[in-house]
Amino acid sequence: MIIDHPLLGPRDAAEFVILGDASLIDRPDRQAEDAAQQFHDYLHLRDNPAGEHRELWFHEQGDRSWLVVTRNTLTHEVLKVELARDVAVARGRDRLAARSGSGPRPMGAAPSTAAAASLSGSRGGG
Image 1 (cartoon, rainbow, N blue to C red):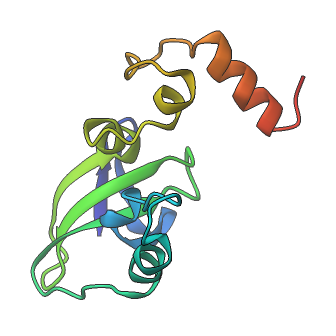
Image 2 (tube, rainbow, N blue to C red):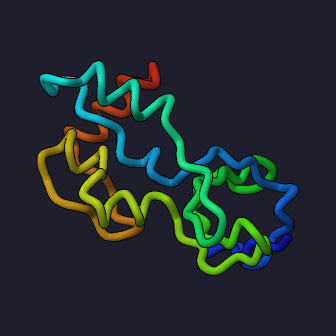
């Protein structure tokens, strides 16, 4: 199976690791009143559809990017490939925007000072 990577072009599926349903991008709010139930459902309840399905793939043997691959699970035909970050931003799930208090940044734009400090602190950098 060939995956047409949005940045690198056609790649063999052997370069990737599949993580499952793309709904994993929609992590529950840990502070919600019913957070325990939401996380139970998020971690343990999965659909196993026959036909078109959106999945989260990791380019382990390449640029280490996360992709959302839409494919037919019966024929393995790849219908669409998107960067997972683009999908998350479109859904309002951008971690940098949430940390910095600003909206989504254009691709290639530097993070705000607050977001950069937060990231460097979380990686043990200085």
